[in-house]
Structure formats: C-alpha cells, structure tokens
Length: 138
Image (tube, rainbow, N blue to C red):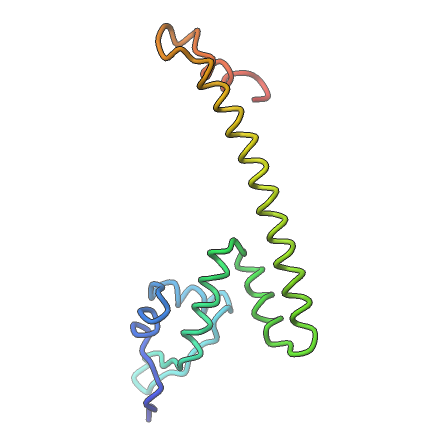
C-alpha cells in the first residue's frame, strides 16, 4: 500500500528539476538511496528524494564532482564534525575555481594578443594565430 507522500520517478524528476535518467544514474552511483518498490515494480519515492536531488544539482552547479558531492552528503549526516569537513571541501573547491579562473585569464590574454596581431587578411602562412598553434610546445 502506498502513502500520500509517495512520489513516482516522474514527479520527483519534475519537482527536482532533473531528468528521470539522472535519477536512475544517481541511484546507481549511490548518491540517491534505492527507493522502495511498489508490488508492480515501480519506484516509490518520498519528499526527501527531491531535497537530496536538489542538493546534488546545486552542488554540481557550484562545480563539485560526484565524488565530492558524495562526501558532502556523508558530512551533512555527521551532526558533530560535518560542518568543518563541509567547509574544508568548499574551501578546496573555491581554490580550484580560483586556479581555473587564473588559468582562463592567462589563456584569454594570450588569445587576445594573437587576435590583435592578426591582420585578418593575407596568406594563412603569415597568420600569427595559426603560427602560434603550430609551434612545438604550444
């Protein structure tokens, strides 16, 4: 017998803003617990599945990997030391983002210099962009 709070996979997907295949994938990856099954074999979720999926989606939007999200979920269940661990993971993610921004700015500046040096006409052999891309070690 189902309760009023049981949700189908489609309803959970819609409420959490994810695809049904994403839910199945997260179940296989252990990020979302296996749901109860109705006698018909259909999955039966409760409202906590929607909350957990929203957590996962938001963490992914912030750049956390699935392994990091798995750790965050475990830490969120640790009522004593979890917050410290969550802060450490978030600090590490922030540093990785800052490092990536620095690298992207370096790449952007290098590309901007090449675009500025390119006259936009003439022989491809004289194009500074193509020359830079063809250089060894570039």
